[in-house]
Length: 183
Image 1: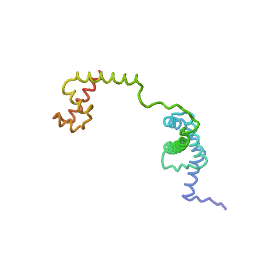
Image 2: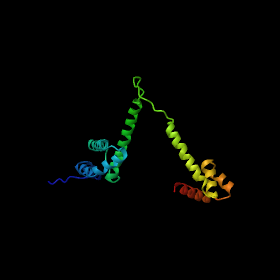
Image 3: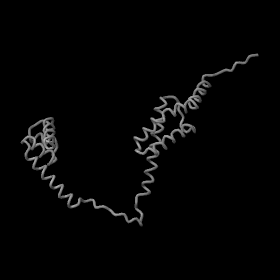
C-alpha cells in the first residue's frame, strides 16, 4: 500500500517561508552586509558604531525578532530594519545625553563668553566699512535694490512698488549686485 503525503497550499507556503527565513536568507542577507554598513556609516559617521548596528540587524533577523515575509526585496527590508535600529540607537543616545548634561556641581569648566573679542569686533567693523564702500560704488539701480531689500530688510513687494519694478527684475538686480560685490 502506497501512501502519498498530501500537501496543502498553506503547508507549501509555510515551508517556503521557512526556507526564505532559514539558511537561504542568511546567505543572501550576508551578501548585503557591505551595503548596510556603508548606509549606517553615512548616517552615524562612526565606522565602529555602524558595524555594531548592522550586527544588531543580523542578530534580530537570525533570532526571529524580525521576520522577512517576502513582500519586498530583501535589501529593502534589511535597510528598513537598519533604519529602525538607527532610530533606536539615536533615541538611546539622546536619553543618555540628557542625563549627562555637564551640570555636575564639582565641575568647574570654563565658560566662554558669547560676545566677540575686541579684535574680532574691529575686524568686523573694518569688513563692514569695506562692503558699504563697495556698495556705494554700485550703479544706482543695483545700489537701490541692495539698500532697500538687504540693508533695510523691506519686503519684496514694498521694494518693487518703491522702485516700480517687477519681482523678477528685483531678483536679477540683487543677483548682479551680489556678484559685483564679490568680484
